[in-house]
Length: 81
Image (cartoon, rainbow, N blue to C red; front, side, top):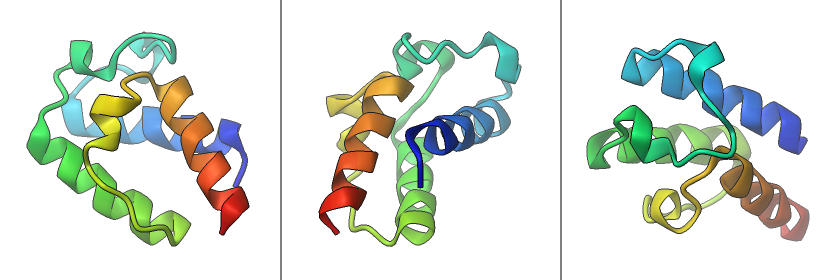
């Protein structure tokens, strides 16, 4: 899966889960500014694991708080799979 597709998916899911307009989400801004909390992070982690076939830790959202950073990390993990 490409970085762009992951970024699009993350943007769509965050918008849906957090009640934010997709157009208002900036890939270079911390996702915590949009109201991400631990329960949403857990939910997204499970969805990402199922979609990508990777084992992920919800702490990733704190280690890579920008969508651009997180998607870059995920693409690198997929490449090693």
